[in-house]
Image (cartoon, rainbow, N blue to C red; front, side):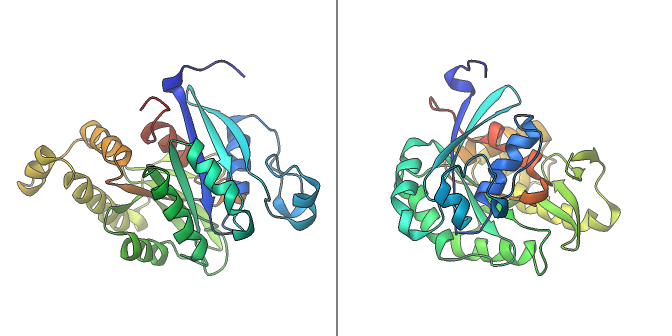
Length: 278
């Protein structure tokens, strides 16, 4: 693994309720980056970050593990933490060593006790900038819109969609990048246009994103209220600043075990989350 400058490092703690897909998300990130040739499964006891015998036997994380992922000229050090409350000390320690967080929320179970605990730890660690990954969108009864609405109700309107799903749980096809206005399909995240049947949903999500980001920047807000078009680069720069200050929390749809949607998540983790030097 090559050496990286401090500004190209991202130390990111993965936190969330037990079973919300932290370990499989880290595994998918390694796979997409080319670090491993085949994704392991928690159920099979062969994932990279669950390496202890007890973790293999019980099929859940017991201690934190650092998963280095080289992505887009940067190194993302993903700190995969346990979800069980018995091992909360591991989460506290990892959050204290990170500059940002990805909080996983199960698209079927929604907000759970572990979600609130993860949010509290991110706040307690100096208000870590964070991204929410709504996971397991290929599972029966998964519902991204319901989870997003619950997140906004619980944590405020600063929580906004950045990548929304394409397809149904039984046929989860990919995601729409709301900022870029592009779709990404399959485990390889093949890029394309926004599907016609999701155009209205994509436009609504983009409006939600623009409105929230504009509220963090006076010049943007004036242009927004005057009905002016806010071009992509300007919006992206304002979004990055708002995420770094905790004024915006992006939400990204993924199916972690099949790696669908994980590429945009890694792109935005590298782009929006801060380095050790800010």
